[in-house]
Image (cartoon, rainbow, N blue to C red; front, top):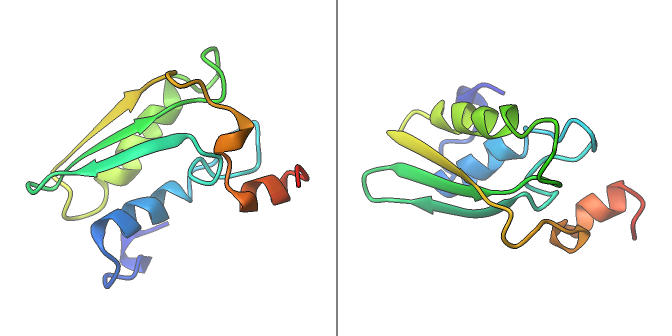
Length: 109
């Protein structure tokens, strides 16, 4: 998704979330935001962004590539000066972190 297509009236956090909703877990057909893999988004006054995220399992096959994809895609938002992606497994991810929309899509509701 090109950044020009993201509505500029949205605030920066909403635009970051919009970008995150276009990144999918390769093993599950749900985006990483709805899947509950994003624990926190912090934006400093200097437009530096820190994203705390997890993976579905510590030995996830995309453990190397997914955080890099998150960093690259969020960094592509024009105003953002720097992106730091922190990978954590505390607390470990569980199905309870998924949005209702994600659970419905996966037939868990």
